[in-house]
Image (cartoon, rainbow, N blue to C red):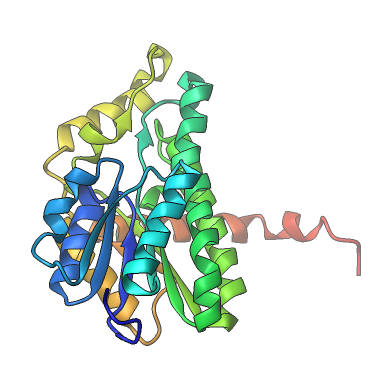
Amino acid sequence: MTSQRDDTPVWLITGCSAGFGRALAERVLAHGHRCVATARNVASVEPIVAPYPERGLAAALDVTEAAQRERAAAAAEARFGRIDVLVNNAGWGYNAAVEEGEDEVVRAMFDVNFFALAAMIRRVLPGMRARGRGHIVNFSSIGGLVGNPGSGYYCATKFAVEGLSQALAKEVGPLGIRVTLVEPGPFRTDFQGRSMTLPKAINEAYAQTSGARREQLRESSGKQPGDPYRAADAIIAAVEAASPPLQLLLGQVALDRARENLESRRKSIDEWEAVTLSADFPR
């Protein structure tokens, strides 16, 4: 067992079998930190940690299973003494118009993208509070700031993560714990092919909106401008920063869309200011 007095940061990352999670686990270990790489199929992450027997640990984790969440966190603490950085990366998407949505699929996606994320946070917070330090990194998306046709339910899970994380940051900041939301644009992670679910019944009424968006995402798969390994380096830099950001946009597309959204909201707020103020009791 590694000494608990070792100051090398200990990361626990969910969803490391591919995509952002795998890239981040690889970069964290290469950076000299310690890492617990998790996935539902532990065999998929064992090659990540194999070159780092002293600093790496592979653990099975289906984030929707309470017993597995406890075992993975306990294994991290038993091996390394603590968890310094929790990265909630596990998640999947649903490319459906709101009317096309299937209740059971939507609930299953919320279970992974939001409820399991919140449960992981609750599991690690007591240890972070006791030590007076820690960092929680929650994967959102540019879709957590801007709704897109065909992604309403997925965006809803990420809007929920945004709200939870912003509140959490205010609660735990005075306790020495930091929170960062990661908001990527399009990256070459095979998310569309590997982690995107389609509705059973496609409604042609939405061919020009959600249907067109589905086709655009399909055609751009493998051509996205974002590099997941560069994203991993950016996340590590944010975690190591003296004043880490609450919101970390990743990629030019995310930056452009976030700025466009802010400007559009500002314009609408200003245009409706008089009506907004008219809702108060007269002064």
